[in-house]
Image 1 (cartoon, rainbow, N blue to C red):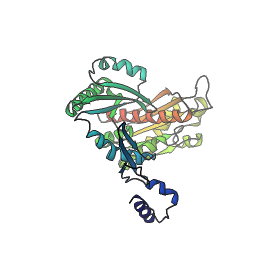
Image 2 (image 1 turned 180 degrees about the vertical axis):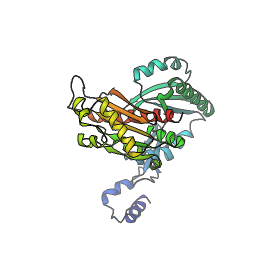
Image 3 (image 1 turned 90 degrees about the horizontal axis):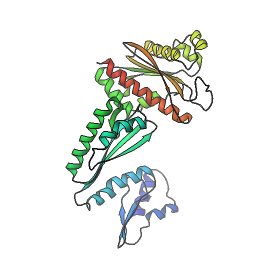
Image 4 (image 1 turned 90 degrees about the vertical axis):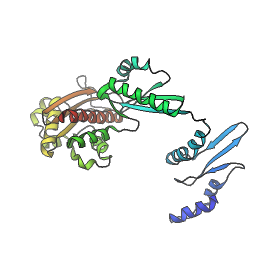
Length: 320
């Protein structure tokens, strides 16, 4: 039956199946087949005196699909009604050490819940977990703890679970009828990519400029005097870039980024990881300097996240 299904699947794709695929139709004696709706190789479940063996294909989307729809429901049926559930609070713009200081009092009063710190390029996720609990109890404890954390961390706690900062920003702009434009140098389009990856972003995002060379910065209104006197990575350049981006686009909000992502180009005054951000709204403009650690890719990713966070802060204040 499995082999027949494989042959038919390949035929629908206009391909001829190879005998090498026949191993995907081999089932160990006594095993239960877990139907794979996302690929070709099925999952297998074998029950024996020593326990359970679950075998899943290695392709991530197939493994996750089978785990969610075939494996977890079977395990949950054996759990006696108890659950282990987690909620993740997503934070950004605050170092892990400062976050731990802020969280110390809350962490000591979580009771049966556990808290894990999960640092990444975009910030530190806080994963709360309720273990072996009644479903209603777990949900109630998790929601209450998330609310306490959000109240403590304020703007740094921007979402829960799979929330993306770009999506949160777009939702905020949509509520306040704000549009966005960007001017990017060292991030090379990452900010625009993050925003346009969200469906419906065209309602908010007007566009952007990748002003990598100084000639393109001048098109945004960065004067030769500024570039000669202060350099491309400076408060003056960032401010001029963002003011030009907002003026030329007509957007209510704009961000500009110019920095040194490395691995070369740094100096004692402007070490690798130095990034200047310009933010502009109806009230005016400001420039902020920040230093990011890591490789070239990590500096760029962190700078894009910081830019989105700054836009979110300005979006909230613009509609206040």
